[in-house]
Every structure is written in C-alpha cells, then in structure tokens.
Length: 452
Image (cartoon, rainbow, N blue to C red; front, side, top):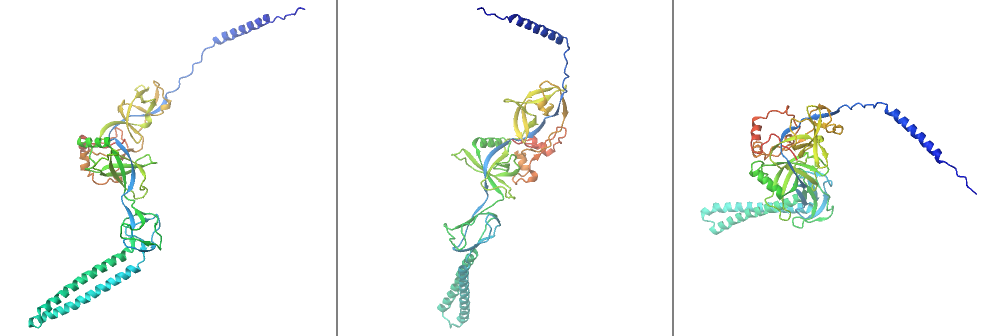
C-alpha cells in the first residue's frame, strides 16, 4: 500500500513571500516621513551666592562627665534619737535649712545644768571679791596677815577661772542643743532619707550615721581628659603667642549633652591639672557652666568644645552647596555665560553647617546652593543671586593673648557675650575699629573666631 504524502512546503513559501512584500512596503512608507525635533528644555533655575572670607578659630572637642561642685554628706554632730525629717525627698533645699531633728530633751537638760554651774561660779566669785576687798581695807591697819590676804586673792582668781570653765561647758551644751537640728550646709537637691524616725543616730565621729546627701546644682563642673597631643599643641600655640593659655585666663568652653547637636551652653575652663596621668596619657581639665534651671545633672555624659587654634582667614560656603562623587567633594560654579561647571574643593572645619573651603574657590565665584539635582555639568542654568542663609553661625571668640588681656578674660563669660553671629557678605561687612584692627594684626588676633 502506498501512502499519499501531502505537500505543504510550496504553500509555506508563498506565505513567507507575501509577508516579505508587506514588510518592504511598510518600511518604504515609513522612511518617507520626516523626523520630529523635540524642543530643548529651558535652563534649570538655581540659586547662587558668593563665598565669604572670615577670620575663624577651629574647635577641639572632648568628652567628659558632669560633676556637682559640692556634695554634702549629711551627718549629725551629736548622737541621739531621730524625731523627724523636715523635708521632702528629692526636693531643693537651701543652705541653713533644717533637715532632721533629734530629741532635744537630753541636750536641753544638759544646757540647763551647765547654765546653773555658771551661775554658781559667778556667785562664788562675787563672794570672794567682797571678802578680798574687805581684807584689802584692813591690811593697812596691820589687823590682817599677809598670808590671809594672798590666800583670798587666789580664791578670787580661782573663782574667775571657774567662771571661764563654766562658760565653756555652757557653750558646749548650747552647741549640742543647736546641733540637735541637722541643717543643710549648701543649697541643692536632697536625696532620699537613709534613717527613719525613732532610730538612734550616731554623730560626731568617723562612724557617724549618714542621714542623706545634698548635691549642689549651680554651677556645675564638667571634667574632661585632654590627650597629650592636644596639650602639646596648646602649649606651642601659647609659646607662639597665638593662643592664650588656660593657666593665664579663662578659655571659653561650650557644652552639648548626649542628645544635643548644638553647643548652646557657655562656660569656661577654670582648672587644668599640673601633671599627666601616666596610666591614660591624659591631663585633667575642668570646665564650669551655669545651671540655674538644674537641667544638668551630676554624672551626665557631655561633649565640650574649646577653641583649639589661633585665628586664621578662611573661605566659607553653606554646607548645602557641597556635592559628593565618591570621596571627592565638589561644588557647581556658574560662569559669566550662565554655564554650570563642577569644581573640586578641599574642605576644612564645619561651623554649624557652614564649611571652610581650604582650596578650590574664591570670593568671586558664584556657587550654586539650591537646585543641585537639576544641574548637569556644562549645561546652562538660570542663576538667581540670593543672600546668605539667615541662621546663626557659632564661632569661637578671639583668644589671642592681647585680646584676653584687653577683655579681662579672667571673668566668666556671660550669655550676652556668647559668640553667636550671622555671617556678613563682603559688601555688608563693617569696617573694623582700631582696637579690632590691632587685635587682628597681632599674632593670632581676630575680629571673630570660628568653630570646628
């Protein structure tokens, strides 16, 4: 039997040919059409400003712990039964305020006994003086022997000594009576009560009962440990007459707590140790800060900034103008034709969002500060000049030796002298006074300082 084979190949060839003819026709029709030109996008709108030049002082930052300037261990000076406590635990107490009261009755009885002894001694002395006066009158008539006269005179002296002794005993019992009221020696915040009423309290010895603690709140210290490199740097700056020494004047210090970004609390360095700690390689320094609101607490962690260099001139730009290309920092600069060009820059210290540019810019450059995401290298932009950002720039004060002497730097800084200013444009910068010009001309002198 022969099988009949169906032939499909010719039919498939005719179909492929038809498709090819259709494709060529469509391609030919499409090629005859003109290409549509898309309009060019308008120049991106950006904000520009000129960098400014300022005299600044870099900051050095240290970590430290807050410490109360005085802690009183409240103990009784006499022993006795505790009657009651006259304060609320955790409250603020004043110096001289009564905190605890002991049973006064034993001390009152001892005082009255001593008072009676003094009065008895006074009476004995009065009698001895009367007798001595009588014998002195009779001595001229030879009716009184010399021995009798001298004996009476000694009795008068003994009477006076007895009064002195009785007065001392009275004073001691009066002190004990007063000390039955245990008072706060300092103003501050009181701790919890360690001994309840009705318990016997030991006082006046090394084993005296600790009743509670009072911790002063204002002012407050912050202890910091400066490493050896920092100490050497400060000493060399002082030798070069570029920075006043903390041993000669109060160096301004600014504090921030662990959850704070800005250093708004101002104080000064009031103590520097005279030796390095051989175990840690650091030297202890202490700053003191105002704490009228009691917000700063003993034992808190804190960061402290102090001026770390002499004054130097630097070019500043807002931090928002800076872009990053991996490790390279750059800014966009607009030329006279309105074209934006990337410019590599080397950055220095940060002054609350304003960055020092060590190299790469001048005060004549127009730097883009707003609209960076819309800018492409070599593209034209619509640049609009804007003023400097209206926000404070925290800068360090002038700490040259001349300025410290002129300003009497041994006094504590006050909030009215806190060096918080806004940067000025070159056109709006005021002319320095003669005193400021002299300070600027001196080694390390500055009209204003800077922060790091």
